Image (cartoon, rainbow, N blue to C red; front, side, top):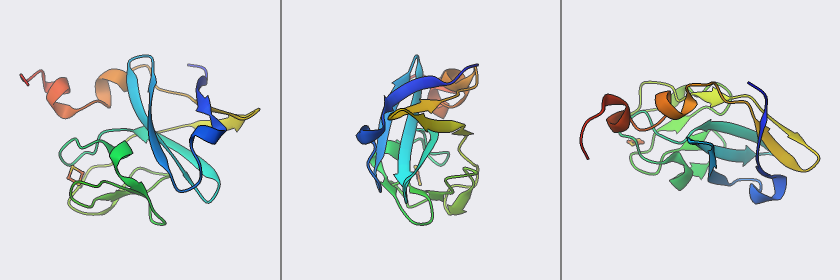
Length: 120
Ligand code: FES
């Protein structure tokens, strides 16, 4: 799968996390100290949107219960989450943010309720 354009670089200023859609996949894109990161938008604890959280020195902070996920690996560095979020290769070219998503990103990295097919 090739890199796909997500946004203009200026749409994700330093210290900010935003939500974007790439096809049916929903991703969070954050920038910290100038570097851009892309990851699943769903917290592995209870599915809160990570784009509603905050970019911090330690990683991406989920605003619901305080889990922090490392930018590079997606590993939780602060509980209560115990499972990593999936991170995606990302680069910037000509003022644009480009992400390479795995083919199953929309299905595998969405909210667990949807993945399990439960109502609601
Ligand atoms: S849903 Fe993210 S820490 Fe609970």
